[in-house]
Image (tube, rainbow, N blue to C red):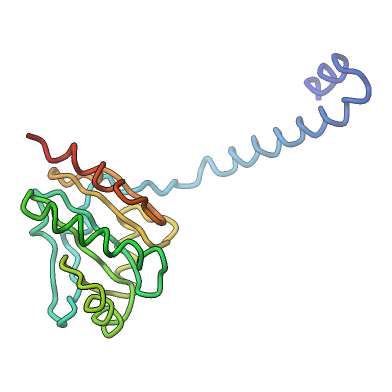
Length: 187
């Protein structure tokens, strides 16, 4: 209360209501911070360890693992066939895959959809990068890689050392992913 009295004495009477509002809001935020200080904060993964142990089926129904991505630059894209930004980004990821696949870069699509829809989408867009699908497991993997909101599209760039370099939730501007991976290619 002393702070309020001091501020009130420094301002004309007509500003007292504004000062009271600011002091009240500050107290609410301070209380909220103190109350949440004991809660465990979920920290995004630093490495892609969760990916190396995951298994999903590809469009032919064959289970696939991803340990083979270790030592490569990996662009892991979580998406769905009904997602409009995902539909726009599929050709961009195909172009990225085609351009960099011989340079130790792997694009992996993990669809949060059913097999038939994924197969149709892959055929329609002539996607050349590996695509797998999953339901709840795919959502959990995306969360384990830092997608705290569970939104799609969600893209993760993983360096050769297995550390997550970048996470992007939502639509990615054309060229942004290439800008992220180019410095990782080295000499």
